[in-house]
Image 1 (cartoon, one colour):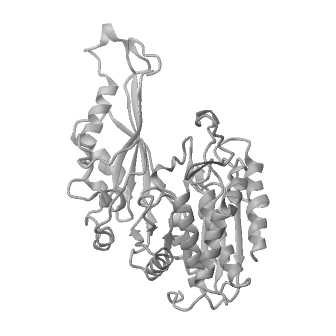
Image 2 (image 1 turned 120 degrees about the horizontal axis):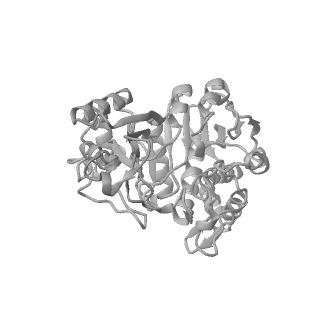
Image 3 (image 1 turned 60 degrees about the vertical axis):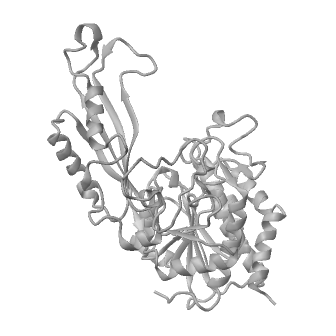
Length: 466
């Protein structure tokens, strides 16, 4: 007789016998970087040669669509409908990666070759996002095998190839195909866990709002000996502008950038007792940095942050004895859905003017990725938490939104689905940089967690249909 324990045992075996590693090695071997020119055919090949045959073997019908926006990667959709009366789960992933950067990887490592070292699997996309959607599909395969080809629920898949370029075209595609993608919940994987040993559910993501601070005073540099002390230095003016926006301890002073009601009660409740771990080898959690009075978890999952991503004045690689003509800083606000982004730019302009900084201009201000959030106590979120805890035998932490960006807003806006993000990676995985890797412990747990959810979605007790 098919059993839940049997399905979990099959999922565990697919890790222990090397099946996941072999599947992931094949996916990593496709150099599907959407950020490098000339990879257009490779992006299509990832879907046509790897994903489409795999899901078709699992009983899906699959189709590859051109991106609605020219110049961006294609989108695969697939569906496996057993009974329209049963719940439908929407699974999301992306098969494109950032640049390979082979010259920056440690000796002996190749971004397009999976390499095992201890409990880490190195390779571009192992964590972001090939390893994550491979885990979810392999878990589904285990449950289908245990149930002799039946699942008991319906599954739809959307896998894009332009996420690393801002998911360009995804919104337009989902908006044009609501019936094709209609589902009861999105349950998918991207991003890091709270910490490596803590299974995590994120119910949304912070958004990003970017802008440039620009001080341009003259057409060219002027001699530092003749003009230093007489003419305004744009770099100093820019530094003063930033110092009025944030104090030396990281408290943001443009208060209109924050949710006016503070951290919402249900967010604060979800984060009560939540400990934020490190997991990296180059960053630290500095207790005195950021918004006073908030826990580390509230700072990163329930509040907004301001970051200077880049600053430039003169030629740092080859300084000359001149007062530079201009200075520029590229800045970012990571914000939650509780914020009014329409206030961000005018509030900054007023703030700078109040401090006598009219020469500092604000340019290119815009939302780059919108924020999203499903209520942490939503029935589908609690259902997923209960299922995972049953499978893993340990607590599962719910966080109201991931600290990074995800395209969940697209699915909420056009499909009305709740978001259940179950990440299989961790903060130290080095995604987007050299030596990206997947940690095997969270990967194996991810297989068990998803096998349990696929099994439970085919049983009674799922949340009510929409």
